[in-house]
Image (cartoon, rainbow, N blue to C red; front, side):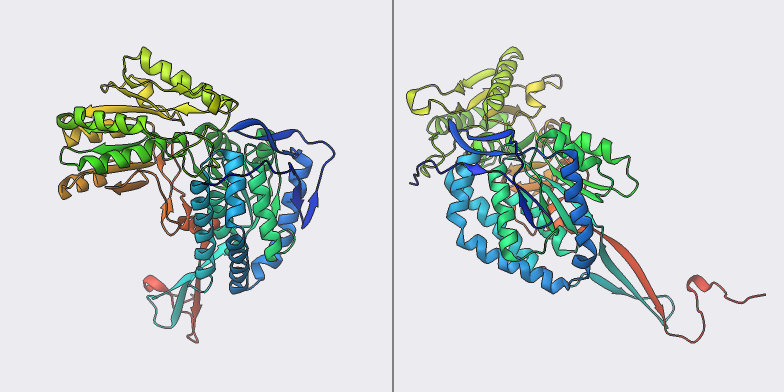
Amino acid sequence: MTTMTAAPAVTGRHFIKGEWRTPGQSSIESHNPARWNELIGTFPAASAQEVGEAVAAARGQFPNWRRTSRIRRAELFDELAQLVKRDVDKLAQLMARECGKVVSECRAEVIEGLHMIQYVFGTGRMPIGDVLASEVPEKDAFMRRKPWGVVGVITPWNFPFAVPLWMLGPSLLEGNTVVFKPSEDTPAIGQRLVELFEEAGFPPGAINLVHGEAESGEALVRHPGVNVVLFTGSYEVGHRIQELSAEHYDRIVACEMGSKSAVIVCEDARLDLAVTCGIVSAFKTSGQRCVSAGRILVAEKIFDRFAEKFVATAKRLCIGDPLNSANFTGPVIHEGALKKVERYNDLARREGGTILLEGGRITDPGHAGGCYLAPFIYRMDYRPERRSIREEVFGPHLALIPFRSNEDAVRIYNDTEFGLSMAVVTEDFRAMRLFREECEYGMGYVNLPCIGAEVHLPFGGVKKSGNGHPSAAGLVETVTHKTAWTVNHAPEVKMAQGLTTEIK
């Protein structure tokens, strides 16, 4: 069990060209969603001019940074890793206070961020290209990677430490420079991360920090000096970023957006295993992960047994203070998120859902002043027009949907505009293969929850969930471009495909 008293409020600052700037006016307040009257800190909202100064700082450092030895760039990440190891518990506590995740989960996120740093350090001495055969024996052919330039990084509140590192790590290692805008809901942990980069010795301008809301993010995306935009968040914001970026001929965009992820429980599933997978998928982080399961598809023959055991387990979940590691989950991020979930709970009722567990706001004295929600679980027979089983909710709102055959489950799973994560619980290897091949997803799991990530695997989705540029290890393909380099060692010109060089 972890407890702590309120810490002093953080003073928000931009970090531009190696200098911390505290503007005269601070317009963003960060509050503890478990105790909304607790102020985490006040933070400035970057103007378009300040964003431009940050981009200019990154542009100015880019030539020196890309010419720095790749091994030296990697070594700075080793310095960063030692600092993160030193501060794991402090970082976890700050994160728990600011975003409402249980402190044990926050600690796991800090470790995940550390793993990304270690991965980047380890790849610093690995190959970054290929030696290829040429049709002409006197030629050597190579594929090499080069950085794009300035990368704009815009990250979400629900993973305010690990997700930024998924983006910052590969970008900086490969020789790009960065302007980082963390979520306005979790600016304190974003600022602390940049303080660690500075302490690790990254040169001025290599990483720059600007705080702000939508206007600051849009100024960053609109800036013509930004070569790559990396974004994780909602589809609506990601779509706007893609629209604005279409105006720039030299712009690459990688967006990881929403989902309506699902767990598929087959007829032969181990029931206890399936319940655990479903509970963790749906309600960890109060259902506020991009990969959270808003749906569990259950074979008709075992539906009643599964639903009874699942609901009984959900009733036992401890929901409370995120600083108490004995709790399973904490609050949702703010009042607006709470009201959105309640609207979808009402929608499920109107669309004919059979309520199995009434959720809603927890109002007892022990949860007073926080944005706490209990799980809302309902049975909903599949109909393509039912919005509650097709749209992302981002909270503890779950539909249990019966299916008759595995092929039926595939059809139901795919009938949403999203395609991020899925899990199947089965002992049947043929069923595993069917779901692997026919479902539309970016990340698939067997006999596991549909949440979870390992940094050496790509993290991203299809359809409205992403545009084919995954985060974590897979991001290297986005923040670099491949070049072909061919050298002729013959005293005369020899061409491929038998092309003659005779001049007549």
